[in-house]
Image 1 (cartoon, rainbow, N blue to C red):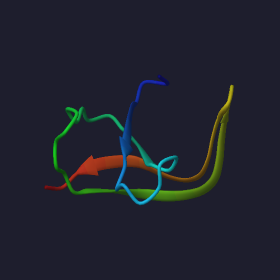
Image 2: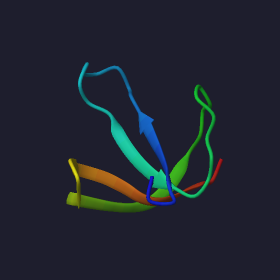
Image 3: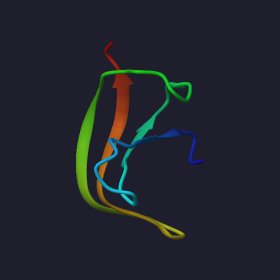
Image 4: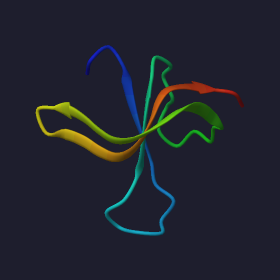
Length: 62
């Protein structure tokens, strides 16, 4: 979607919360990674895609 991969990280602390990361890199499900990117608050992409907090332009550093 939008020429990005949408990575969803869940830490198990809440059933309905995950951290969304947009990236041009592909991360297979179940892979343990460390990523860096730009933290953005209250991002609204339109069409129902809105996030209180999102990490954009993520890249794998480990």
